[in-house]
Image 1: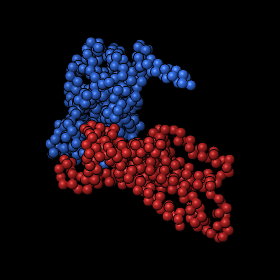
Image 2: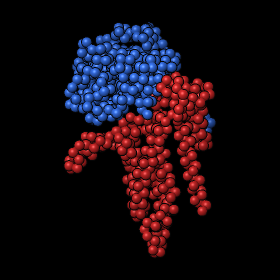
Image 3: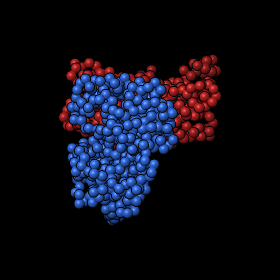
Image 4: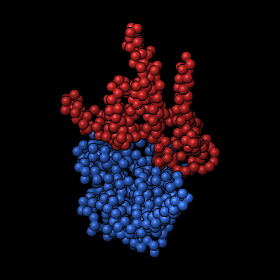
Length: 278
Length: 342
C-alpha cells in the first residue's frame, strides 16, 4: 500500500518529463523529448546552432555530487569516532549522549542554517574571536564560499551518520577485538579486519543517508553559498517556483537524478550481495 | 454505532457550513500585511481570515496552476503578473457597484494597462526596485547602475543581487539602454556578456535576504526594493537608495479577485476595507512602500511619509514597469538567466 503511494508521484514525475511545456508553468499533454533534449544538447542562445553536448547541467550535477561526496566523507570522519565513543559508554550514559546529539535537530533546518551564517559571517562571533586572539588580522571570508556550503551540509546531516553507525557498533561484541589482540593483531588490523566487516552495514547506511539528501540540498547552497551557482536542488526548484516555469524540464532533471541514485544503489546492493556470498 | 456515525457526520457538515459563511482565504506575500489590520477586519465583520504566504509572483502562479484555484479568494500579484493571470483566465471581475470604495483609488492608478478600468484588481502597494549602497564603505557617486554591473574597486565582492530573473535582467537592460523583451540578437548577446562579466564582482544572489545582508554587513551594496531599503536604514545600516540615471523598475502589487473564489462576497468586503484610506495607510506604515489610495497622508507615520526612498528627488529618470514577454522571446531571457547561474 505504502509502495503504491510512493510509486504514484514518481510515475507522475516520469510522465511529466515527456510532456510539452506550457508557457509559465503547467504542461500540455503532447508527448515530446524536448526536456531531455534541453538537458543533453546545446543549440546556442538562440536555439538555431547545430547541437553540441550541453555541459551546463552535467557540470551542475558534477558539482552537486562532489559537494555531497565531500560532505559524506566529513560526516564519516567525525561521525564514526563519535558513534564509537557513545557505543562504548556504560549503557546508562548512552541515551544521554544520543539525546545530546539529537537536540539541535529539534530546531528547523532553515533556522539552523541561518544561525550558522550568523556565526561565520565577516563580523560574526567566530571571526571576532579569532581576531581578538590575534590569530588573524582580517576576517576569514567564509560566507558565500563552497567551504560554508560544506560546513552547512556537514552540520545538517551529521546525525544521519552517527545514528546508524552507533546502532551497528552497539551490537558489536568487543570480545572479538580482545581475542584479536590476544592473537597479537595490531590495532589497525583489528579495526580493518575485525571491526569494520561487522559494522559495515551501519557505515554504508550512514553514508547513503548523508549523501542522498546532500545531493538534493538547496538550503545550504542558497543561504551559505550565496546562490551564485545552481545545485541540482535549486535548478529543479527554479523550474517549478522560479520565473522559468518549465515543469517538464524540472521533472526530467529529477528523473535523471533519480536514475543515477538508483544505479548507485543497485551497484552497492550487488557488491553487498557478492560480499555476503564470499 | 451507525447512528453515532450519522450524528458525527451531521456535525461535521454543520460545522463546515457555519464556517463557510464567515471565512476569507487570502494568498499573500510573506510579511506584507500587519496582523493588527487583519484583526481589525475580523472584529468589524466577524469574518475569519486565513492567510497563506508565497515568496515570488512565479511561485504563486505555479501553485495556483498546480491545483489551488478555488481554494483562495484573493491574491496579491505584481502588475505584470495581473496581466498574465488575466490572460490565463484566472481572475474574476467585480462591478463598480460592488466595489463601493473604487473611487478612493488615486487617479493615476485607476486605469492601468495591466487591468484597464480596474475590473479585477485594486492597488495594494507600489514602489520601485534599484539598488542601495552602504555609505560607510563607499562614499562616492552612486547615480549609475554601474555600481552593480561594473562596480568600483571598494564594492567588488560585496554586492548582493536579487535572485529574480525579471528584476536583474530589466535593470541590466536599462544599464545597457536595451528595450525590454528585445529580440535583437546583438542586444541580447550584449546583455548576456555584460552580466557574465559582472558576476565575479557579486557576493550573492538573494531576494528575501536583500535587506538582511545590508544590515549585517555581508554586502556593502545590493539591488533592493525601496521600502526594504528604508527598513534597512531604520535598522541602523547607513544605506542610501539610488534612483539611477539609467532608470529604475517600477512595480505595483495589486489585490485581485480570483476566479472560483469560495467566499467571493467576503473577498469584496476585504478589498473595500483595504481601500479605506486609514487601512491603506496601515499597510504602508508596515511595508514602507506607497499606497495607491487617495487621502492616506493624515494616517501615515512621518518617517514613512518623508522617507528619501519614497520621495525621489526632482528630475530623476522615470521608472519603467516590467513587461510580460511572449513565449518565444521569454526563451532567450530564460537562457541568459541559466547562463548566469550555471
